Length: 266
Figure (cartoon, rainbow, N blue to C red):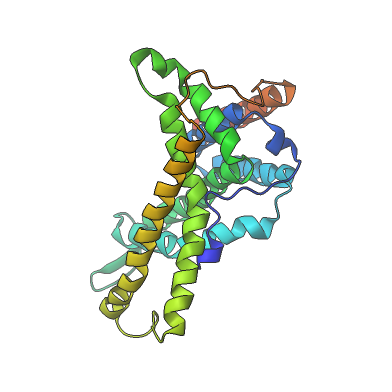
């Protein structure tokens, strides 16, 4: 299960999406998320699904690697689907006692599941195709106008990127702790839900200790390198909007306009 979480991981290839400006990729991700919430009919979701499939193909990231990110969230998606099916009022398709399935509930559940799958794909592509350093630079540049109102844009971008960067590290540390506890006879799959929750305590305590230790080591390393925030900081790679970034933006806008048109027509 832990190996299936791909959030925060970077998959290095030399695809067009990898070479896009990180600022443009962040903007495109926000736009696609907005379009996914705007779409309210089957044709709109087909358009967004086609755009997501196109992005996955162009990114040259293996489809199986992206599909791994859905596995840890299947339970949440299933619960969301069931809540929509059984708790939405409307034309009754099936009923037994207090349980009922309505046409509107099935309709909402299907579109909710599609929307969640597309959202996960879009957000994963951002971290899979952007290195932590470029992601930090992109976030900082996008938030740089906020410096005029004394918002520490560099520090915020750095904290967000460090948090994403350490997700795989903490998952790896959790896996090591689970294996060590299992080797000592601990069981995490037997008993009722309360017994399993209690069995997680020997995992959480050393995990928190390890996380704080890593944070202290990172702070010490940054101090030893005279890190002083974003003031007078130079960059090895200058961010520059190129033709491929404009083309990617235009393609996304065209799909977004098409989604709005389907909302009007259907």
